[in-house]
Amino acid sequence: MSRRKLTRQQRWRVEKIQAERAERASKKDERDGERLDAGEYSAERPGRVAAHFGRSLEVEFVEGDSISRHRCHLRANLEGLVTGDAVIWREASDGSGVVVARGERTSVLERPDLHGQLRPVAANIDQILIVVATEPEPHPNLIDRYLVAAENTGIPPALILNKSDLLPAEGGPLRTMLARYLELGYPLIEASARGDNGLDALHAQLTDRTSVFVGQSGVGKSSLIDKLLPEETLRIGALSADTRKGKHTTTTARLYPLPEGGIAGRPREGDLIDSPGIREFGLWHLDERELADGFIEFRPFLGHCRFRDCRHRQEPGCALLEAVERGEIHPERFASFQRIRDDITAS
Ligand SMILES: Nc1nc2c(ncn2[C@@H]2O[C@H](COP(=O)(O)OP(=O)(O)OP(=O)(O)O)[C@@H](O)[C@H]2O)c(=O)[nH]1
Ligand SMILES: [Zn+2]
Image 1 (cartoon, rainbow, N blue to C red):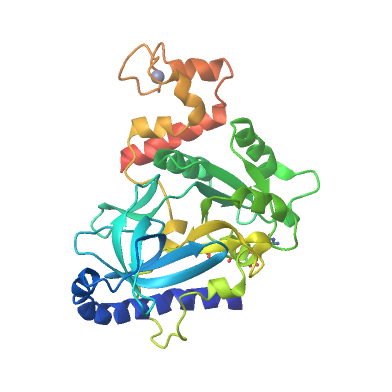
Image 2: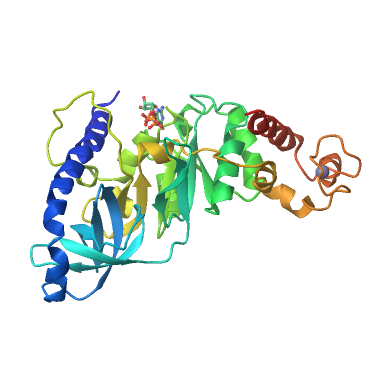
């Protein structure tokens, strides 16, 4: 494991300590309602939730090229804010603040909590970057699973083929398979966290958007993020080295500004939201209809089967089966759909 990766894991642990501090500070927060009325806060400003710690938040405030972060607490009636949320906040003279309102969400990523209930973990994400590599080789149907999950959130996905330095000269089976997704209209970027191959294309894909990286362990998400974020950005939020080793911690999703070319001090190019929970993004609570709808090339045929409750197995007049026959749906994608359906209906 790389040294920088350890640093990131420590940082996630440090967030827990911050959360505990915030909890202690929250008692003091109760007095702030009175301070608001007494006019001790600035006028209202737009901001974005950069991290969430128990009862307080870190709000990012962008003014021209300068970005500042402010520990904020919430007005009593504001609940359920997540990283990435647009907010209205007011700053106190000591740089802390209070969040007074939440903006509309354009999208939300959810995952199940300990009780299996879906909870939002991040909001206003513009794209899901699905990272794959030749090594580790993707599990069967893995890419389709990620694509379906992404389609279900309404957030556009793009595919990143990392470790392009390991691709055989003739391309190899993974690249051939990925060409199919390009035909379906999904953006595909070949990149390498070793060297600079594809980095320009990756930066272009990230520009003016809020992105998340997902993908199976070992494909190089951390390595790519290390390339995109300068060291000081990665250290945001780390107050001191963690001393409580081995303690289970819940970690918050974090919003990082991406500077142009990954170089500190350059203007912001886009944003990245990352957390272990987001990386494990998957197919939560999908039913068969949502699954079929997640295969974008199936959509024109859905609702056109002879039987309204067609399950697209062997039914006569099945519009999907006919589309496979005519070559309008790739048989591998259809097989993948069937396999995932069998998995989700078996559980
Ligand atoms: N050859 C090559 N190796 C890479 C590349 N990117 C990452 N690696 C290596 O692949 C291994 C896994 O990379 P990570 O960045 O830790 O992968 P990850 O996706 O973050 O894994 P998790 O943190 O477990 O989710 C490391 O040994 C990296 O050095 C690449 O572009 N080319
Ligand atoms: Zn059918």
